[in-house]
Length: 174
Figure: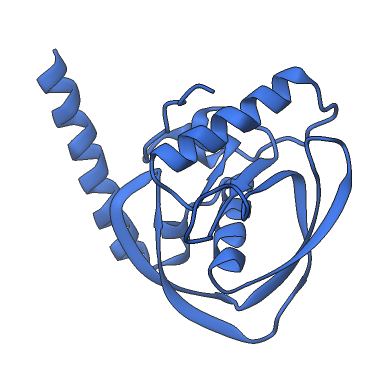
């Protein structure tokens, strides 16, 4: 399994809406396993295909403490079919916005329908950290970053800092 480069914001690819996976084949299955390896190595709780430059509706998530693969979800074309009315405010971060965290309000639980790499249809009810992780990754599939859910002032500060850091990194490598 390969570790894929994670796109760091600001980058226009992260704002693209991902397309549905029409056919699950060896290429898609390899991409998913590479995403899993990338997520665990980062380390992160979730990863959307668009974050590695592939605009497909695929996410992987593992909010378990063990990170032994038992809590791992590989989701193709995921859709929220129900969300709890009860919300919770928690701090979120993102592999595409390294070192930045903000508090966001999201539903406490979600029910998600998706296709597994085997082709089997599945529905999962997620609560707590896993629910938040899934919602965060689903936002990526719509071209939305967690900073799009905070104030414009705070978002612009974070994105300017990331732009500056990218520019400095390019200058150092030149």
